[in-house]
Length: 182
Image (tube, rainbow, N blue to C red):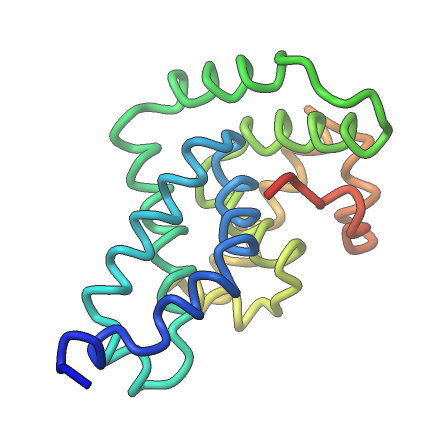
């Protein structure tokens, strides 16, 4: 085998196995399928550049997820909250399936779009990915107290904008409400 092939050994299998899950997380962060796909693509390109080292260090997925979270926050800072909210609202207004699950996804997407990127990242990591406060802090590169305060502020904001979702957050979100298209 040539060295060029060895450099990416296992990368294709990783992408095939994890792309859908990574895209779901990115979608919850962005509220926009195109932005989610772009975030995942950027994260995978970054991972490919360091693939050998990531595999040697163990599981590359936490690295890829952290890129997704930080790039979403960077995107928000660069473009601005108002512009991103406008895009999320336009997508939410597009025709969707009439089922209850689709309605829940629209409500969830709209509610998440009204949170700061940090709050959204904490809720997605804690409730969608079912991480502990310590794991979330590690994933996001912040302290456990930051995770706690961001969760508290995010839930308070959700109580204001989408009270129907808060019961799910307060009693750990139901999986069907958190499912999004891949």
